[in-house]
Image (cartoon, rainbow, N blue to C red; front, side, top):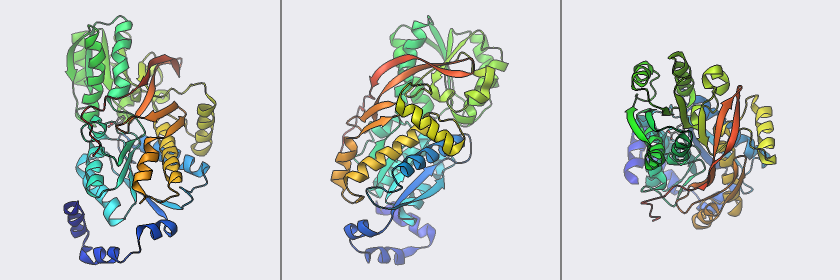
Length: 397
Ligand code: BEZ
């Protein structure tokens, strides 16, 4: 814990004076009654995942505004930081929020590699971390922690049902193409778990670096391999470019494309004909016919003039998660045991449907099958009911 804090303070030139000042502060309980809660929000606001970061932020703010902009009766301020989806900067950025800015809790991020770095710093600084997107499986498996919660998904979760979907569609061979980083590997792993178990064969895995959008060589290889289908993990601006390139390469008409819904969410309108027919699995679908979803989509549109997507849903649910936990402890974040208990017991009435958390702090949720049809995303059904990540290797200590 001290190593990271010291390193950061030294770099920031603050030195021992800051530590001395901190030790002169009143007790945590007294602080809880007066000071604003400080929420460190670390998300990408530039780069290929920028739109994802903005939707998470705006929807979380929308939810907090609906609750009167207070958490457990306490005012709060948000300290925002653009993490650029850059894992090498992840630890320094997280330390900046927790050590320099003295945030009470950390919220973030989108990119799994950055989230892994954030989790290390949060652990060293003994602070809560709430993850509104990044699905790195280790964070709710072997590196789970009592103070780490995820309101989104594990990378395995939306991917796993897609292998069965491809098999049911009659496909026997697949090529996988994903960015070369944990989210890509783990998403591919989820697809393989069901596709290979059901008798399917993976004939090749093509792995461009993150966030490269140079897809041409991979697409040429797919054309020559002629698999029955292709499974990909791309998201944000990179996903848009991939769909367009796939169509331009002449593959769309002959080789069915599958992926977790990150492939089309937030970008299928811009993709136009390139997105038509793509089948995806995800813990959300635009046209879920529930009052909660309809109300949320209308409110998000009114607040931002944009259509909601899965990232907005996750931001909104992160707001609900913060509200439920901090209301239970009347805003006193130092009441750690009751807060953990409250967060472990949340039941979130989300636009995606009601979900609870598993023992490893991961949503247990329905995974939907969707397809882009006539320019809209259509819900085809539930691909897997109440799917939980295994949480294997997680020991809460
Ligand atoms: C990830 O890095 O875990 C991730 C990024 C974008 C969409 C989904 C997952």
